[in-house]
Length: 173
Image (cartoon, rainbow, N blue to C red; front, side, top):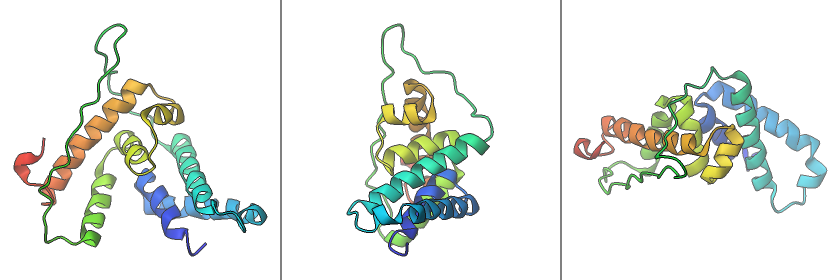
């Protein structure tokens, strides 16, 4: 438990944006781990199992208790065509004198400021390394909606980070 508690908690906290909910979810994850302890004791993939359980329990929690999703209109480019992803390049203007711990704290705070419908897909894509298709299936939303929400989340993150001084204001969209 000690080896994985930070990973489990941070997974839940990033997705929920709420430390109290993340603590409850982490506790539930470790209860499930306790129930599966004979299998996990010798498993070299225990960490991956815990991360998967943490992600799934958090998504279940969000789908059970979240307010209704505020849907944006679906992004379509016409019949038979697929929506294209707009890629926001990572600027090289991160303030050099901010250490890694401070950057981490600022990014976590910025994630918490995003609305849930943007934060969840962004975290699943960038932190949980899920594909757009996997996110769409997991959240039961369309693929274009996933792409739109991630695109808008990136733009919002850039503005928030600019406010914290991590990006030059001129580079924020």
